[in-house]
Amino acid sequence: MASQDSENFVNKIWWVVGGILVGTIITGTLQFAYSWYDRYQQKKSLKSAFSGEISALLGINDQLEISKYAKECKLKIQKSGNTNLFYFPVKNNYFNVYTNYISKIGMLESDNSKDICTFYTYALSATEYLNELSENKKTRRNVKQLCEDIDDLIALLSKLDKIGKAIIKHLDES
Picture 1 (spheres, rainbow, N blue to C red):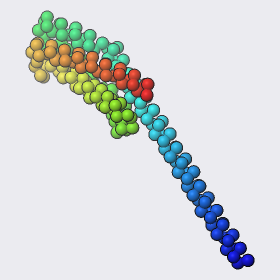
Picture 2: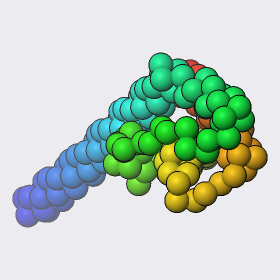
Picture 3: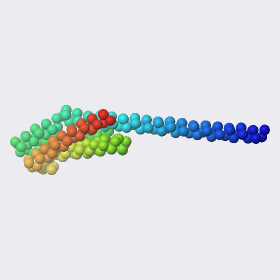
């Protein structure tokens, strides 16, 4: 009888150990699945946010026709010799998603991360360039220098448009 009690006790212990192992496996699997799904959702939201902001920036550029304005100013500057005609300062920060979520960009595929960083580096450069050209009184560029700088700005905006559209397409497809 004592051996039967001891056998029952050992069986109960094995049932408890087995239950603990099965519970641990199920809990671990559920935690892994939840973690994966949460990361997937964050990645999806991040792609959507960057796509939306880049789309908005390109839309602003199209709506305001910055390149067209720059070309028209360049012609006026060349005709008049007045280097203070270009005025298009950027007063606001239009890069809220980038500023707030750059620390999470590693969640995206490396190509997306690289392209997004490239886009925003160019975009930040373009806003600085617009402000600098608008303050020509301080830098005192001559007509030739200013017109060359305006051409550089137009090329930069064109490059931004091309990169931005490619990013949006890639983010929306992936």
